[in-house]
Image (cartoon, rainbow, N blue to C red; front, top):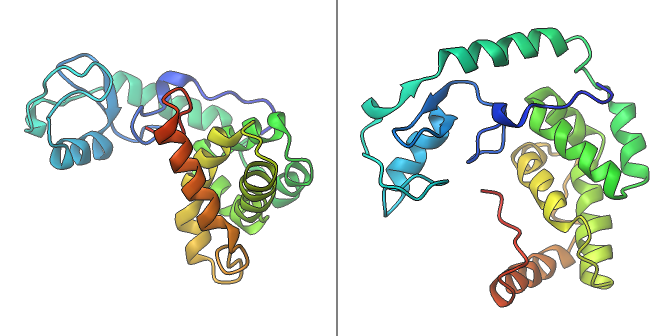
Length: 197
């Protein structure tokens, strides 16, 4: 994979993942169909997540963005050979979880399911919990890279939980306390945001 950069307009503003079926709302903002349909079904106020303008609840007002879909498919085919990052590369990034490594892991986690699976197998989720959330934040009070680390954890969480050999919760009793403190920080300080949407 190396330095392959995901074009920002390929990423859904709701799910923060590369769009599989891009659709454009009447406000002109493009989302992944599944994400915006879920938003419209579950949101109390039916508004555009980005512009906050009113949106109709019906998905018939979502216009498929075929041009963007073809661009994403073309980008995937161009980068597919280089996108197969192996477990050893993730293990190297985990050894030194500095800001650059966390940023690179976030890009790789956004890229595809295969990378996320490999990241869980390499122990990335467990390392983020132990080194960033518990050690740096909970025990030392550092918030550097915390937001991006939480985004990675959010992407890896479903796979990490279903992976029985890497039980990331049982070994980390400080995890709940850490997450509670993070939520408290978000409530207390409007400038510190750990939201992923």
